[in-house]
Structures are given as structure tokens and as C-alpha cells.
Image (cartoon, rainbow, N blue to C red):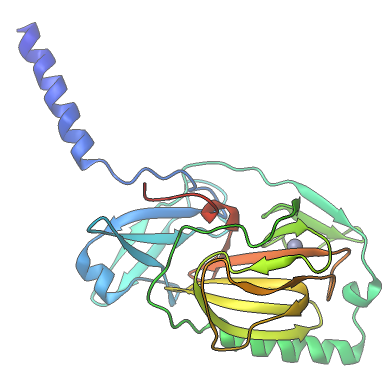
Length: 273
Ligand SMILES: [Zn+2]
């Protein structure tokens, strides 16, 4: 009897391991939630608040990679994902991550911009918001490399205080490096926009495919133009200190389904192995 009982336990364990879901490691606020989806959902495309959720095909399976909003606090937050003809609800967060604080002193030019600069800021925001809706590439290579060799000087997700007043959370990662250090594209992509904006300074905005996009800001010089196809590791510009910056560094932000996530999750990390 005991033998049969043990056998049942063993069999049910095997059965469970077959049915096991994808094991998420980064499902905290500002992280990602990966779930297997069916071929129909993959072909139709999933969206979250009208924004495409990145999907990939790996080892004959289909997965979505949902960008979890930084504002999600705990495992009570639900997200509704729609596709043509249906929707489903996910409960993406099951891990905690605490984010620190950073205090920055910066020129008043940026914290209390002049009237003419406010006009410029609004115009540039409008231009960038229009491009943010765009994505063209269908392939998303999730195995990223570092865009620059430097020291991390600002983590993703920290609360930021500028001259003592709280601003937006830090929506990317900062690498301190000398002016002129090479910046490369961390994954393949297409250049959506380049420019020289009030806050960003010189920047490059890249579509990595399936609505996964990176922006690199405060550059000294950019070496690509709109429409350029870039390979992983290809030069896109040089580290600088332009725009709202307090020293030479690269700021890199990554969005999935228009939600900022910690870019370091994708660096030297084979998510599906
Ligand atoms: Zn930054």
C-alpha cells in the first residue's frame, strides 16, 4: 500500500513538472513577466492598454514578455491583456524589489526652465511621443550585451530628488564613462529617431522589434541616422555630458509595451535557456 502511495506521489510529481509554467525570475515591479501563449495569440498579437506586448518564438514555443509597470507595488496588481477576439488577466508580480533614493544637485535651468525653454520642452515631448507609438521590426533578440564599458552610477527604479525636490523615478540605468567612450547597440534594431533635445541632449532611439525599444541619451555625438539598421554591437555614438546631465555618462532606458523596465535584466542573460 505504502509503495503504491509513493508511486502515486512520484507519478503526480512527474505530471506536475510537465505542466510547469515558465519559471519567472524577474517578475517584480519594473521587471518582466514571461508566460507561454498559444500560436493564435502569438499570430494575432497581444496588447496592454493599446500597446503591443512583446512576443517571441523559442524552441517551438511562443511566449509573451510583459513589461511590468514600476508603479505596481505587490502581487495584488492585475493586468488585462487583449487580443483580437479575447482577453486574459495576468497577475505578474510575485517578487519584491526595493528601490533606493538618489539626491542630485543640478542647474536651475533644468528644474525651473525659462518660458522659451518650456516651449522647446513641450515641442520636443510632442515629437518624441509621436515616435514612441511606432515600431516596425518583427524580430526581438532578447540576448543583450552592454551598450558601453563603464561603471553603473545610477540604478533603474530609484526615487530621484533634484535639488531636494522629488522628480520622476529613474527610468533607466546610468553608466559613468569618459567622454568619447564608444556606445554600441545592445541588441539588433532600427533607428527610430535621433536628435539634440533640452533634457536628453544628443540621443538615439532604437526599435529592437515587437515594441521593445531603447533610448540612449546625453551623448557627445551620434553616429547613426533614422532608418539605419543596426546590428548588436554596432557603434551608435559616443558618451557625453549633454542635456540634463551632471557628468559624463550614458543613460539607457528600455521599454516593453511602453513600460519602462530595468534594461540590465536583458544583459548577458539568456532568458529562455
Ligand atoms: Zn539616468
